[in-house]
Image 1: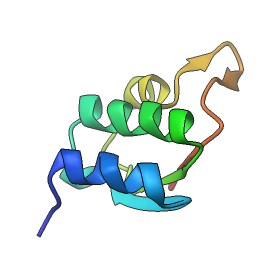
Image 2 (image 1 turned 30 degrees about the horizontal axis):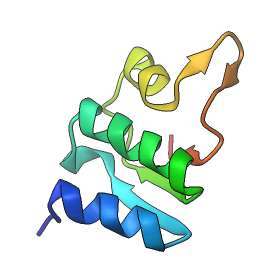
Image 3 (image 1 turned 120 degrees about the vertical axis):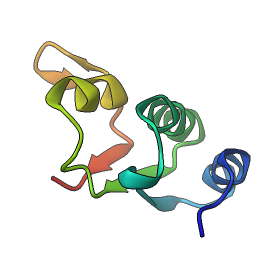
Length: 77
């Protein structure tokens, strides 16, 4: 059973590391979680990303040039 989006956002505010499954969330929701993790300084681990395209992964971690703008996100590739 998946949590509600607002529950994940609240967890990110209190827990230093959070693991989420990319197959349960849309790319827009993953982007929101990544943004929240950078604000709260929580490390966000996103697993099961095999179905995401390179462009979608870039949008989630906000790649500019050759570096990620969000250092609080880790992807399982």
